[in-house]
Image (cartoon, rainbow, N blue to C red; front, side, top):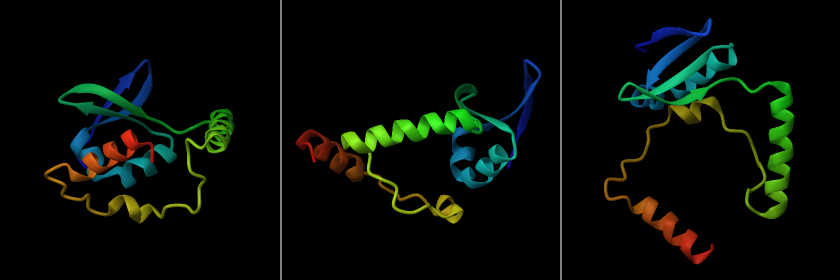
Length: 110
């Protein structure tokens, strides 16, 4: 993994391109769990920051998730994804048919 390490306000961060982070998400998440902060760059411009969730944030997210499940906007968690899930190859949807189907379902309210 090609990494650039930068220091911003005395906080160590790892920077990764969008393509590299997509290909190595599982490894990046392990680094985040170990306390690293990852900044994702799109053509050199920061577009996302991935960092560990603190305990109080985790409680807030759990409450938010409960509320979203109750309102029907989020399906309840059935089982955890194995880390190997993120190593699976992405589909090659050249014509965008998956996106078209999802947008059609959204329009129809399904």
